[in-house]
Each structure stands twice: as structure tokens, then as C-alpha cells.
Length: 217
Image (cartoon, helix red, strand yellow):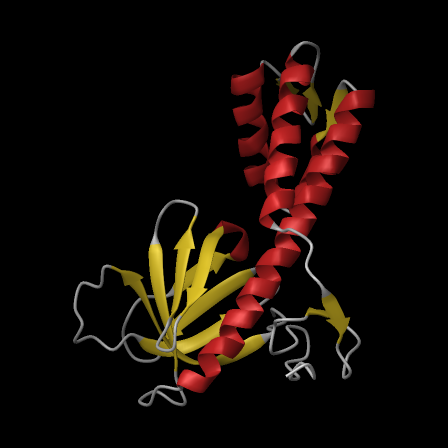
């Protein structure tokens, strides 16, 4: 069972909504890696990896999410299955932003590790890459076959075979990706949560780990 950071009532829609009359109300669940929405009576179930989030924005009425494929979603916090709860929106927003920034930092570390491996080895275990990516084996092979097509690598059984000059081209792209991710997750000032000890950004109102209010406020 997933270890959820947040669970509560919400309305969740993919834009544009087919009907404003349908109340897509249910339970919103947020873990370290994924946002899930389970409708209460009727509606659509959603499961969106946080790695797919491109933008998260907030106003006093709703949280807006844009994913990497351009899909747009709207989220409204609820007190129950009938009544909205505007006060909970900023809390959910802070959690999503904090988790996204953690993912960006993790992606940068993966990129750096992959670059180090390719500099010293021309034969890389697919199982090792699976652990590095934290993906299912099928998805890992999908990535590797895409690399093989793009850069001229070879997938031989349980190994990825790489060679120059394809490695140099690949590492150049990794370098650009790392710089892009580092810019996306630029370092901000953080303070320690007085309740659980986690580092929390100064401008985040609630600790994403324990939910306690940031004492700066």
C-alpha cells in the first residue's frame, strides 16, 4: 500500500470539462511519486506521476496542473463531498511544489550518474539501469530501444552496448538536460521543520513531510 503524504476530499477535472454539471468529487491521494484521484460515486479515475508535472499554479479558487504532454487539470480542495475548502488549496499546492522540486533534484542525480557510467564502460547492465531509473523492466527497455534508434546504441540481451562517437553525442544531450533540470530546480533558501527536522523552503507554508505549519509564518 502506498505511503500517502496527503489524502482528502477534492474535485478533479481534466480541462476542458465536458460538462460543468457533473460533480467529479472524490478522494485525492498524493504520495512521493504520484497523484491519484478516485471518484466518490461517478466520474473519472486519474493516476498521474509527479514526474509528468510540467507546471503547477494556484489561485484562491483552484490549483492548475499542466503535464508534459500539454494536458491541463483543475483541482479544488473539498471539506467533504459537497463543500469546497479554499483554505486547504494552498496546503496541497505547497506539497505538490515541494515534491516536484525533490523529483527535479533526483533526476539531476540520475543524469550525473548515467554520464559517469558511460564515460568508463561500453557495456551497461539493463538491470542496473532499471534500478537507476526506478522503473519497471518493460519501461526501461522502451527507453533503451529509443536510445538505440536515436544514437546507434545496441541492446544485446540484458546489456546496453555503447561506443563512440554516439557516446559523445549522448553525453552532450545529457549535459544539456542536466543544466535544464538544475535551472528548473534552482536552489532556494530552506529552514528546518521544528516538528520532523526536514528541510523546508522558507516560502512554503506547510512541511511536505509531516504537514506541520512552517514557523516562519
